[in-house]
Image (cartoon, rainbow, N blue to C red; front, side, top):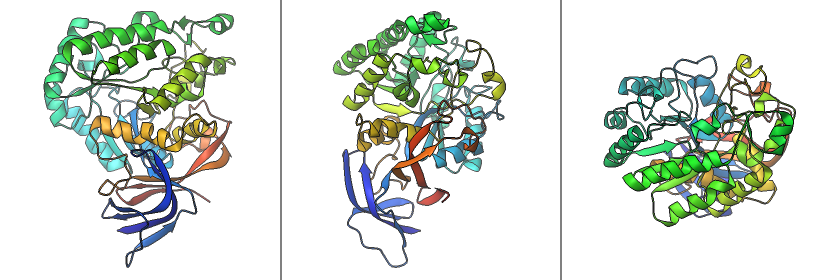
Length: 425
């Protein structure tokens, strides 16, 4: 299949440029970029001045298979991703059972390939059952296709066990993804400590819990030399330590979630449990500092941290409700808030949402270069709409953006040159 996109705003996150031109795809790959003539028999798509960018590589998506298929399946997550411009899902291992053996990894890999219209790659658990007591068979899991290892928000508290796992991961060149939180301080917290949480009577955690967790993990990174990614940096207190770690040459990267970039603790004011996420929403000062860190390249990756929860787990008092929000379909329009506010350019956003996660995981996606996979998203950054959560393709509807006016609509999504989503007129 040969397709030529013409009259497009080409968003190149690798070169950090935005230009007007054409893009040609042949046999599932990008064949040419710039001023390109249509080959004989090619399908021509006029982009009408809309934006064409690499498909989003979303690092840290929870899918319910196995164990919680009623919350999200590979099929529903894939459809939601395609509608949101996400062409590669990096799925978390916090399933039931956890993805901690080659057999479970092979099962979910096969199911994902059968059911999803977009690419799905999997992380595997760092310890068996994510229990923090015994490391998994990292070498066998790598051979089975694991792209990284993580216990997600189950922080390994036994430092000796974690150190052994990191040493073994280092010997195999495996990437470890950690959650920088002190589990003792953050247990049971529903908000970030401060005057607002006190006035609302919510159990809270100090931002220092993130810094303490970061410092503990960085000490082990320094000791072992492992490749390490911090999944969510959300506070200003952790940023100087992250900057020092990078300046000292350690192989570390950091991410943050779209919710922590676009929402703050005041959104909890009405006790709406759709705003309960993990870690909890931070102060406006923390939010702005995190946005600036993304703009400066200190924080490398923006992800959805898509966490589907059913109605029963959310229709509870705020402190008892499950944490998490769906975001595969809202990641791009929420990111457009940062673009329209002038805080981040489109190339900067796609560098954090597509190029950097692909590069960190050693994947060929996330680029608008000749020879790269033709995983693309065509979108209008200015088109307004009011989000209705019941129109989301995810099985779960727990989005904090329900009823909010947003800008930025995906018009089409392609995976390996094949169109997997077309917006309704």
